[in-house]
Image (cartoon, rainbow, N blue to C red; front, side, top):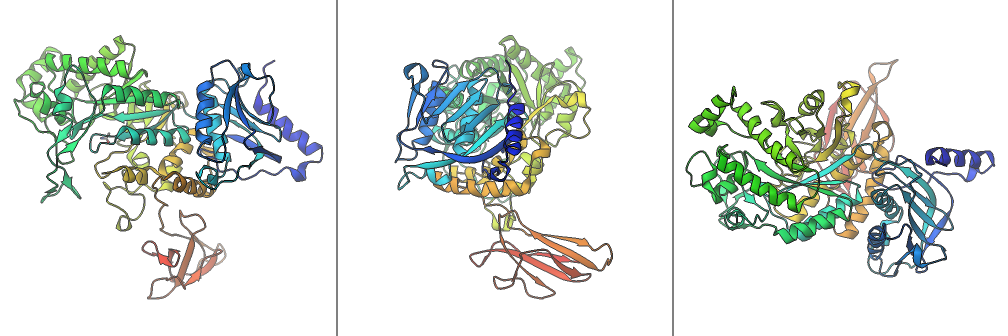
Length: 622
Ligand code: ACM
């Protein structure tokens, strides 16, 4: 019999209510991010201790997931939890059981977790679903569990049933390793974050003007020359005068390292999409092989940020080079998508090139945008012939889309809309919501960033499916992704600071249906994740300390307003002052509940932590 766990859980709830258990039936607050689409808690708890084992059914299918769970639990040095295959044990006691249960209705990535006094069971249709169930289970444990020393050796987990599946099939995070290079150890640490938040795709931006980062055996100069720059611009770029540090900088991943990272990600059910930029953002490649450009060069690996005029020239030699590079890339990355960039391609060199103009004439191409599309189409044919699919940034729409291309919409949502309307899949990464290189709080109080202003709350508010798409086109929006460009992220700690906690907010955007999102509940949950970040040594931004002063006029007396004060910070100490030339300080009135003020009043409010002003006070004149 096929049983649908959603109906099953509904039935259980009804039985609990009808049998008079209602007063005991309380939904415990859970801290899981992304929030599961359905759950309820019930009285009692499971005790996790040294007698607990992780038992995996289904032969060896889930041995990897069992090992992963044991590895995560081993952060707690008081416990030593073993894995055992069901085929090697006849007794199932107070254990954690992982089981593929093909009867459930979870699709490829959904799962159920059941915690009772007797045991914990995690069920799904697939190992990926089991893995997401494990992530939710781990987040039922208090952050203190993961502190390595001085832990208790018994942990109670409140009884709960969770039934969950994602909204989108593409849930991505990107990382630019061209502008700054990050070692394999950090890439794995970053992938760990993706795993915790149930992302299934890591978009690895491997080539840039400022550095080529992947070993290609056939073209050794790419990493002998292209992976290194002589110097790096310091501070805000790029209005003169520019300052440079004068230090050689660079690095690259060997093919063995890439294979290691791909396997590491795969064991966390994360597919890596490699990005090999073309035809622009290719100075590092041109510095290595100048014959691929339209002009003779020589070229240098870029030492400042921005967009550069020298791009690949669409000659046969270039296509041979790119096809050779992609051949090695495809051997390393087994996923179906290959990202070819396509963004920010100045056309000057192509306009000046006799060869380009000849190609355009011979192929009836009206302008250089169409020449770019011709270029991309050629690459798409090559990828398709090898069973892969092409993704490009939304500029690939400009001269006409390649037949099977998926579009990453970054300059807003329009690219995604246009792609979907042309029956192409689109991944939403619009700057205003998904660019985690933007400031996330008042720049005056933040480390240097590229610009923009994309707060945690704004990321959380994002709905990747544009309202004005026809229902039949909406299915082409396959998900969303956070982009992490690293011009201003010189080290690992800065990357962590910029992505945490915004990637947690995005994880809920791509996992949970929009009408189930709840900002205030997220605010509470993310606060507990801050504890986890501290324990795991991740750097993070606590959020924007700015106070929103909301004023609602009284319907009977338009001169009267009800004022509410809010900030992104959970349970913030907000102090305010009315009609004063002074700013609020830590002794000003503490905000505890909405209050009234009248027309013409000036309200100033700010957040304090341990008596310290955290950001400029907000001011509103009513
Ligand atoms: C991009 O941000 N240039 C895709």
